Length: 370
Image (tube, rainbow, N blue to C red; front, side, top):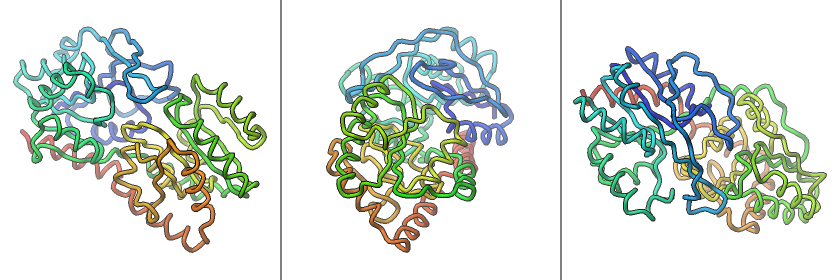
């Protein structure tokens, strides 16, 4: 099998998966629509597989239904020519930008199989556009199959007309080994340390998290907050932290490497994802793998598959700071035995996100369609 994958960015949480794919096929090439984005601070290398950046330009659009999040419209040229040079026998499209539709057309015209793949949701703004809905429905129905990165994505593929037997659910894998190793080498911090990570943009819920920590501090004055990430909201967040009396208790760590993030997760008492929208939320299972108790937004797809409330972590509605504060208080009040049981249950839950397990399922699914 010669596998071509068209995806938006070379995200760090996909590197291990692409390396695993490369070990299981005769040839793999990843076609990315952009080498970098101004609102992403990833530092990654395409080691172990071929990668080609497609030429084009990119426009930020306010297309999400969540204030503060934006969609990137990628307009790339030469998609068909690039695919012809590689001569794939199977094409996977990880999105719905013009380049993905060009890849779909190339596959159909060349008589080879095309698969839709990724973190599709019904909350990404496409429901407001009849044209987007029609285009997605056409691609998904015309594909040989779909590979869903979560149960939320599976439901979205079915909504757009995919047949149930043609949808594989292979949860988005994460680097379990990296985060497990951190849990062994990083000693937990003293006191109550709340950690969160993500792009510092409005829709990621950091403002609500600050409000929640300010409420929590009335009951737990020892609590500290550490925030990993960079973005346009950093200055407003620092100002808000100061206004809430949290300036000395809140540390903004900036963008970190995966190893550095893993160490932060392992040292934290609780990890919080307060995002108002997340097509998956890889940092949730990453924190779980690091042995950290998680409080996870109900609007992150990973929460639906991995966070059993009160068993493997806690679910929270991030729009409500009081609810976040109450859930954090509940998590911090756990006795050591209950905490250990939840962390062990979380570690077992994320086994489903093993890279080799996901790669075996996906490549087997692709080969079965031959």
